[in-house]
Length: 273
Image (cartoon, rainbow, N blue to C red; front, side, top):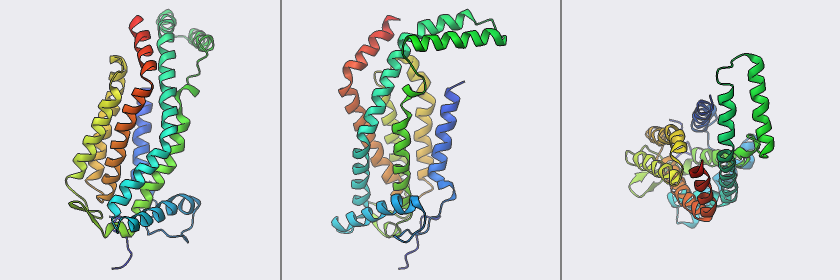
């Protein structure tokens, strides 16, 4: 069989648009090549990220008696374990931001109420100055407190592994469990969507109702999008997404346990306001 790949077949709004664009870019690959990759493939990202992942997938498949399904599962867990410290830092940063925001909110509400009916440019500038004074008073930086760096670091890794699966034609020639890794499966999309729905529900556990409402739209859109994309790609990809989602569920439960005292402190602050 020739080695040709068969895979070639106001703030919340900004977050939603960014997430949607990112997912579209990730899953579409921005029209990147789907040709089989090897050590001679040109391009920095191809040579130093995608090809090493492709090589590792084939190497592990050899250890698992030719099972590319087990290889993908094992590689997904290895990658997620390596990213665990970054994700832990991001989770801690988010908790810190939420705690500071809970303390800040009453004072911010007062400032916003003060300038509610004052829409001219001078008053709006004064409001911004008072808001900045509040941030300085509480040592709060909205940009650095968001903890975006861990997220930015993990994107090239996850996208690289995605393209390693797409550009390793040996995967498409194998079966795993009940499905062919190189063909679309009708069951895996529901599994992938269900896993990410559960992950969203687990992540919301313990959050205050206001924040749950803010995250609801994105939380429900993601499983739907995962399911829809999974119906249009080879089964190897929803297998990868499902395993990654299961790891995220365990990761979220671990973080909530490790930071339970900080979560309880945050709940107490919110309840007192």
